[in-house]
Each structure stands twice: as C-alpha cells, then as structure tokens.
Amino acid sequence: MLTTLVIVATPGTGALFTLAAGLSRGTKASVIAAFGCTLGTVPHMLAAITGLAALLHTSAVAFQTLKYLGVAYLIYMAWSTFRDKGALTVPEGSEQSAYSARKVITSAVLLNILNPKLTIFFFAFLPQFVPTGSPNALARMLELSAIFMLATFVVFAIYGVCAAAVRSHVISRPTVVTWMRRVFGVSFIALAGRLALQNQ
Image (cartoon, rainbow, N blue to C red):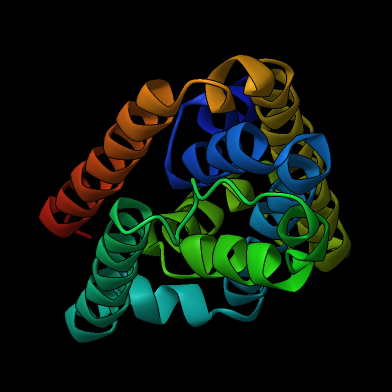
C-alpha cells in the first residue's frame, strides 16, 4: 500500500492532466479525468495478468514502439495546450456545460495506455505479492490491481478537486491563465522528454 501510494501520488502525466482539468473546467471534469486515468490502467493490468507484459519487457521493438507513441501523444497534448485547445482550455458559458466528458476520458485513457512503464510496473511489482503456485493467483492479481486503481482514482480526484477549488482565482486573471497554459505545455514536453530517455 505504501509503495502504491508513493507511485500514485508522484506527479506524472495523469496527475498533470487531472490538475489541468480541475483548473480549467472545475470539479466534475477533474473527477472525470481521474476516472479516465484510472481506466487507462486496465490494459496494463490485463497485459500483466495474461503475460503480454513479458513481451513488452523482453522485446525492445515493442517497448520502443509503445514508448514513442506515448512521446508523440504528450507532444500533441503540449501543442494543443499552447494552442488553447488542449488540457487547459477555459470554455465559457454553454461551451463549458457542453464540453464532452468522453473527450476528457479518451485523452486521460490514452495518456496512461501509452505509458510502457505502467505495464512494466504491473508486470514486475504486483506478482511479488502473489505466492508462487498459488491456486488463487488470478484472483489475487485482480485484487491487487483493484487496490492500485482505487488509489489512483482517489489521489487523482483529490488533486483535481484541490485544483478546482482555486479555479475562480485562476480563470478570472487572463495573465495567470496564459502562464498556466505555458507551464502545463512545457510540463507535457518535459514528460515527453523523460519518457523518450527511458529504457526497459
């Protein structure tokens, strides 16, 4: 639990996206973003349980392919943010209520799916807590994965709600919004660079 909380609470792409959603669109959008990020861990969990994670762990081609897709998507997120159409867009009036929850969830899911380190985490970390030859190995893996997903959702939602609490102080100041966009855009680029430099 301690390791899980440390991993989840350490700011990364998901936390950044959830913070941006809370600042730009409020509490509801931040919770939706947290849910999307949590949903994005499901493919990694399934990969670990079915053994596909072993392929990613041993195949340099598979790892590099997924990694650079993630890098490309983070750069796209940065570009969208700089162009006022990304994670930190501040919609007005009816645009805010009409903003698609599906778009927020899709972006959040893609951010996590295209992170090969999550698959490696599930593959290398969770099995350590499942006894070798255990008859309930599958159930135990699902249980541990569910705990990780719950922790992800709760921590990210807290991040998002806290960001939403100061939203009015941010969006009422155009200069602050501009600088926040720049900070989030640069942060996405920095995360893309960090991911690009990671090895298996």
